Amino acid sequence: MATDKLTAVSIKQAKPAEKPYKLADGGGMYLLVDAKGGKYWRLDYRFAEKRKTLALGAYPEVSLEEARKARDKARKDIRQDIDPSEQRKVSKLTAAHRAANSFEAVAREWHAEFSPTWTKHTQEKNLRIFVVYAFPWIGSRPIAGVTAPELLAIIRRVKDLGYLDTAHRLRMTAGQVFRYGISTGRCERDISADLRGAIPPQRKKHYAAITDPAEFGKLLRDIWAYQGSLITCSAFRLSALFGLRPGEVRNLEWSEVDLDTKLIRIPLGKMKARRLHVVPLADQAKEILVDLKPLTGAGRYCFPGLQSRDRPMSENTINAALRRLGYDTQSEQSAHGFRSSFSTLAHGSGLFRPEVVEVQLAHKHGDAVRLAYDRGDFLVERRKLMAWWAGQCEQMRQGAEVIVIHQAA
Picture 1 (cartoon, rainbow, N blue to C red):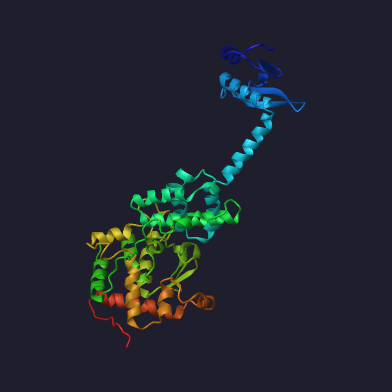
Picture 2 (cartoon, one colour):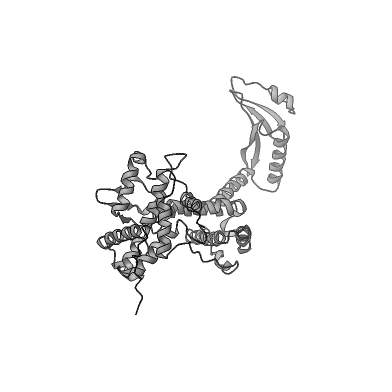
């Protein structure tokens, strides 16, 4: 059932038979038609006194013209003592090696290896910075072949967009990927180290915060008078009473709240410091949560979003509420600034040891040696601290002069 030369018509009209058969095109190439009607290009040839067959693709994905070009190339390789079958195996191995050792492959492997130790926010941020700003340009490049000028080009692109802090973070995280590549044998050096000082330094970030007791009292009066949903009002007030980061407040889950013991236990995966953080609840804070629980207690989050109860409220909710009250979140008071207000007034009172306040803020305190031995969470003292702070907030809200700042002699 063979012919001397195939045509597009003869290929299209070839029907399946009881057994597979071949339609020859010359030069050792033929179309193999199987019993189910599948049509496959094949090339029979001899190399090193052995008969071999090379697959050239399937019809119609590979046209007759494309199959003939592949045949001609293979026969040229044979004349140059190159086995096309072995050449294909090498090409596949090389492509697989390049894919496994590309910057993107190594970066994703690094991310999968270390992300269990990060907060969810950090996991998403570290991957997104590569997906948006690096992979489209150097993701497919072998990591060992990426040069410092190439990396600098993508970092400068981010900087020129106005994202200087993101540009610095990209250099830092890229450096971690290169160091991981060194440890796994995929590259030999961290080229990000060559880029230190290549872009302007980061701006020191200070969150806007009110630290004057009288002004903070006015802010508290505004917050308690705020007209919004119970969910927003509760989160707004607790932001002032907790001293937690905004993300820790909005992601708070009912499973982490124990109203009986008056404690909140935030697991290490959600904390920036990557360790369990216990927050004592003052009576005033507990009362807010007790009032809120009938509304959101059946769900996962204490402060769910407006669109879905399966997601926490937006990260912009508290800042938006502050702006509605007329506060400039860049220069006067921000959601994150409540921590600074609490820290400044608590430290300034002179009533509590500095390490107690720092632990309440989920900050590390002391040097590495001290941290290795001092693992106490000062819970008894922190209960007193948070009860004091809630009482101070209540009195400041009423306009009383209650904060005494102790200055060093």
